[in-house]
Length: 163
Ligand code: ROI
Image 1 (cartoon, rainbow, N blue to C red):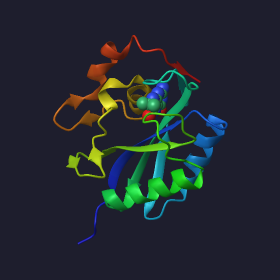
Image 2 (image 1 turned 45 degrees about the vertical axis):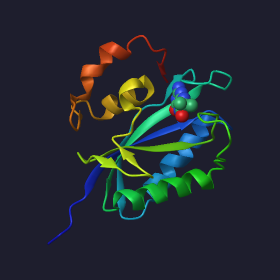
Image 3 (image 1 turned 60 degrees about the vertical axis):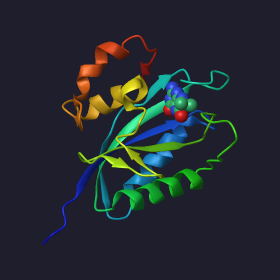
């Protein structure tokens, strides 16, 4: 039987070393991802750092991919792109970074593994994830939750600018 492609959503974030250029470069890398096809990407969004505030504002976006990669193989590829773009894992949790690629959703799968939690644990609290995701997938549903657009009201107080 033909294996089916999975629709996945990936969150991109950067607040170091020309964030917009970092995201553009990451989108190019995702276009070249093995066994995958980039369907679309959102606009870029500017927001103040959530968490530690002694760091630059962030640029964020979301992309939709179709992929035959299994979740952990996809995670390996995303981490390789982060590394290629100079991501250094430093001591401060939630510190500044050149590039963060988060696997937000993998079809409607729920994954709870040591290396990987899907849906990404932060989705529902973060306007910088929800807004770009709804821009490219207005009817998207979260497993065990329902339509993501139920959250827009609750997140309306978070400062964020669509660029
Ligand atoms: N804050 C914003 N605005 N955007 C991010 O991508 C982001 N990523 C993070 C933390 C440090 C939690 N804050 C963020 O990992």
